[in-house]
Image (cartoon, rainbow, N blue to C red; front, side, top):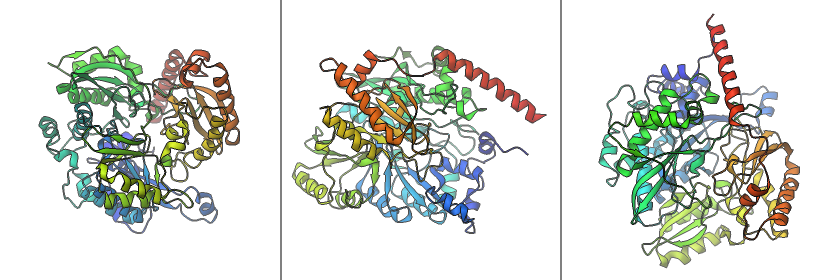
Length: 596
């Protein structure tokens, strides 16, 4: 009997319920079956094991060191001090720390099977949720991190919450399994400022999900909102990006981009990263409906045969942008759409340090190395620091898309107090860092990610130490250069639009991509197919020396590379479509053979 496909598992799940309740009630095993792990992702959790001890345990004929990662979902990265303290308390159920994600969420790793229900229960009672933080649904909606008090920033945050409301899956399985049937709505559903029509649309009756149907989406779906000229939400990497158009200080509407996504497989031209493309412009009142039309187009036209080609980027490429647009417009009867507005971005960077919000209060954007909230031996005591601030200052907290933290709504009279707490715990301001170090980012990778081929979070800081030394030696410490690393080609660390990106191929080996942009609007090309980790700093030095020698006055790295270099072995669209067609033919033949 052939292994059930993900689509079959979702179809037979009775609203993502499956046997999750029964398997988590079974205390005789530390893990769940793989088909239930597929369903569990939709509830906001992944089953993992500690890969640092996998080989040792296998040699001793012991089971893997199973645990679970749980991800909290919070539109625009917003979390209250009280909610932060609950997450900090839950670290005792995990591996003693939290991980900020580059999708503005929080992950707890190392939660044992018997503790997962308690963790999810507490997250939900805090006013957040894990529902839909993973799985084949619309994930956490990203938004501008800076808490600027103006109409534009207020509207973009409101939009992230409206989108989150519209696309929560509707089955009662989540409440039944984790909350003993208690219905707890996330705070963004109860917010009176959110559009009532959007809120009403979330109250569908039990049964087939009105948006997701019986089999949900073909793959995960990522959405981000950004305000020009700051592309902190990296909209071109998203399935769907939204950018407000402002008239007289108010948001008139949004330009929507579609088809971004970075997952790929080494050596397969039929899988590759794509940047989002401008699709259309919609007036503000119609934006959430336009988002739904795009999501349902992907639901109905996405590839459900081959998961490697199931993201919306492939749907857009297969249908063509004009064909995709026509289908979206067809799903918006009576709603007028317009050509997209011109988009111009300067950077994806966080503006670290102290700033005015515009309402008499301040915010402070604090650098967090690799987004890991942990008390480091001999280093920053991040966890103790932010706990003390949450307990004493009690300010709202924002997770940025670059995995830093913003402390918001600070009274100017408390500025010295916050600075003293930061200094007490060794959490220094980023003033002395290179500009590249401030924005460099890596995915989690080993030891918890089951897909990682090489180190990422644990490797990039060491790489950056050596790269920093070169930058300072060459007088480039203030240059905006974007470095990103990911442990496998799925690209969770978003390396494919970085100036310089590293993608794990094998232990201590990386593919090196060069030629993206600090603006996030250009794909990098493959510069080196495989580089030993020890050789990475030297390869980077060659590029930096060439940049310094050849740059024009005021030219940044991205513009120098675009002017003087051609990209590496990036496949042409023709090559991509040829291999995609060949792969589809091969899969169709395999399906027929299996049926026979």
